[in-house]
Length: 271
Length: 276
Image (cartoon, rainbow over all chains, first blue to last red; front, side, top):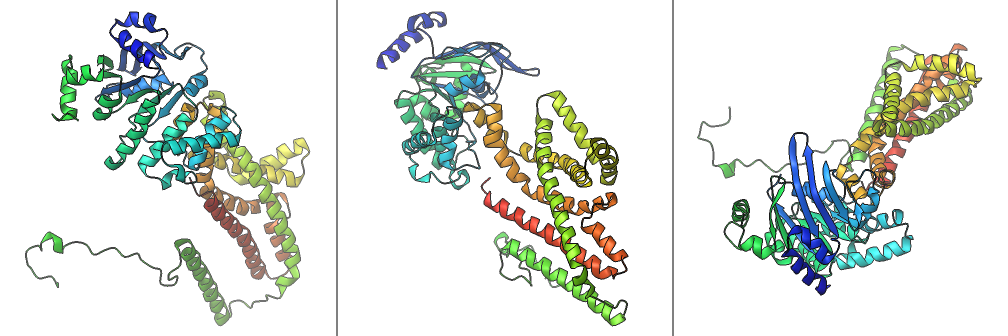
């Protein structure tokens, strides 16, 4: 794993075209993706590579296209042109097995979206049982391990509405992990949380990143982005206008839009 | 005017008094559902007693309740038939309604169109007319029995309303539930069966109970095709020269027994599946 990271460092210093040759296939490759809602272009020619084990953070104002880009990666949103390849499976082709891609891609939503009629344990074990056809005992065993990992092992027979927002989001992360995805997507995972619960969710995500999980995160938590991410993309008007290591983007933004945004978000204090 | 013409008091003095929950005088400290049924029972029995007293004092009607036990076996047998008719058409109506409701939500225009036509056709015509058409045309062509024709007519009618209830229940589920299910790799059908339907159907229970209570009452219309259900039998018993008011009161109580049991069942089901 560290070797891959080193390769990635080399790769990032190269022009976009040369990267893939240097380190082989990217786990997630986005190429020239465009998308419009009616007359509004929300993604204009977006390209992005994410290598195995990387944490990539997408930042930008609301409406900049970052959530749409994320949702295109597991086909919750379709795109008009371009290509997305995840773990060797191409998304933008005519006939792809979308369900197969979705099994490789875990998604964590802003509003948790836990299944309201199921207990915490069933929320986590349902998809492995019916999609991967795992026996109930095995699926529940792993569900319990995951619950322990996100720190709420004692809540397995609670229903979602009995949990706090932070606990619900941790269950949602465990639920996505239960499918053993190759990459995890986080769509503003802490934006719907009360401030005192943000930390517990970020802690889980930090541990996940340290365990080597590939993650693509849309967030407004700049402290988390700076500390945990390997690569930051700043989106504006449907384009990635600036990208680089957190140090490059946060400390020495080259694009004035990035600088203006960071100035507003951080409000002068370096978090 | 009791208020003196002083300037408005300081804001902290004008704070509204804490709200106190209102309690029904009759029902005291019972939980809300319990309170409601007690109030209903009190109201009903009060009205019945008032009516009886009025009739007795004014000698408007001399009651002969002794005719009821005589015709009760006949009426009970008819109640059993009404129960059978209702049960079968409820079951068939649910199946029909589920299929039509899902078709209505389907992405396939032909299915959707067929469901719309079915629902609008049934909702736009009187049940009595539907019963006649099914009995005199469909049942006649297919050589079906009176009973079968009756069940089919009721089920066909109920199915359209049930379809709309299911559709509303399913559409009321947050789209995020489906997105979460799909993002875990579930197919459209799996997401529907394991995530959307269990929640949508549970939400449909209260309106369904109301629909089926009407259906039980509507089964009285089957008397027009001479099925000997409760209303038809009531008419028959009365026309044999027995007292009419006593019989109709008895018939009403028998219907109430069925519909109220259904209401209780619905409430129980809703509570048991109460986690959505």
